[in-house]
Amino acid sequence: MQDIDERAARRSERTVALLFTVSMVATIAFIAAYVALPVDKYIYVFPIGHISALNFALGVTLGIALFTIGAGAVHWARTLMSDEEIADERHPIEASPEVKSKVLDDFRAGAKESGFGRRKLARNTLFGALALVPLSGVVLLRDLGPLPGTKLRHTKWAKGKRLMNYNTMQPLRPEDISVGSLTFAMPEGMSEEQHDFQTEIAKAALMLVRLQPENIKDKRELDWSHEGIVAFSKICTHVGCPINLYEQQTHHVLCPCHQSTFDLSDGGRVIFGPAGHALPQLRIRANDQGYLEAMGDFPEPVGPAYWERG
Image 1 (cartoon, rainbow, N blue to C red):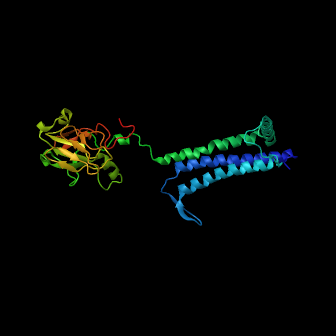
Image 2: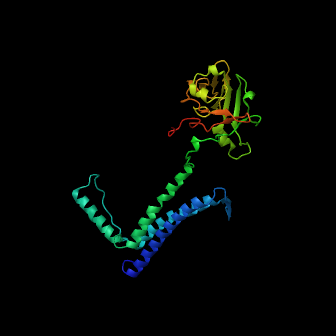
Image 3: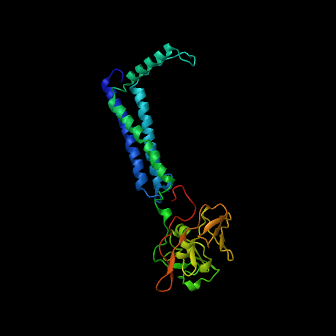
């Protein structure tokens, strides 16, 4: 009917345009649902049962977006394009000039019969639908993980935070740390009941060793210590394992995972193993009440190196 009745053809064009427009709206709804719906919200959908509201919304909206593009294309082909069947003989792989000319003529004829140039409403809405659908995939890239920002460069340590004994949860005094001992500490205000404790302690874990000041070889390490007490990150700079083996006579600490060895009397530098750089040192002092406290955060990111570390 559309081949002989222009009004019917316009109705079909509007139907095609409506399907493409629905696809655009569904794509926008997909993005809105992804941003607005929390990942822990569940809804009841009969007969499926309780499912994630986010997954349900994403599946429905993306399904509608893709389906309506396909339905619009099929409706366009069936109602607005020619349905003449043409049989063509097989030809060699290398086309002859006559075949090339025929292909171009057929293409121009097909383009003319499709009304692609004349049916501007259907054409433009198709372009809009095809342009928006890929945004669904782009938005999903966000699930690769939240952007870290500067979180990898900072820990819970800050100026004035007292050093808390990791085992007793009591603030440390210089007299609590004897020469040759290894003590583990964490920042004041942290608690194992906090939901982000494991994440934060993985960056803020600290080990304290008391050396004779004359045995400290690195000048900055000596300046950042207090009465020979030095504070270094407990996190190995190879793959992030916790360091807990200390050689009292050599002042070396050993990572049990891959045997990276660091010299705590010489700026925490690497003397053996696959670790790429020295352990970050935390500058400490004793406050007016006699407790050890940090004078700021680590001067560099703790733990393993990463591509933008600097």
